[in-house]
Amino acid sequence: MPASASVGGSDGIAFLVSAGIVYEIIAAACSSPQTAELNASTRAATLMKWVHIGVVQAAGFVTIAAVVDPRHRNAIVGGGFLAGVIMYASYLHARSAGLASAQPGTETNWTQA
Image (tube, one colour):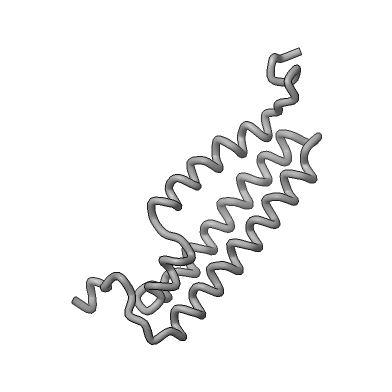
C-alpha cells in the first residue's frame, strides 16, 4: 500500500491541490472580480472571454482529477462545479456593476492614453 493511501490521500486530490494553487497564485496576481468591477469600462470587452477560457481550463482539470480518482469523483466534480458557478456569477456581477457605475476606474486602457 502506498504511503499516501495509508493516510487517506489520493492522486486526484493531490492533482487538484497542485493545479489549484498554481491557478490561485496566478489569478491573485492578475485580477479579481473586484478589480474587474472597478475597471469594467476598460476591461469589459475582454473580461468574459478570459472568464470563459478559465472555465474551460478548470473543467479540464476537474475532469482529469475525477478520472484519476474515481473514489472521490462526486466530491471533485461537485466542488469544481460549485466553485465554477460561484466565480462565473461573481464576474458577471462585477462586469454589470462596473458598467453601471459612474465611478472612475483605477486604470487606463493604452488606447485611451
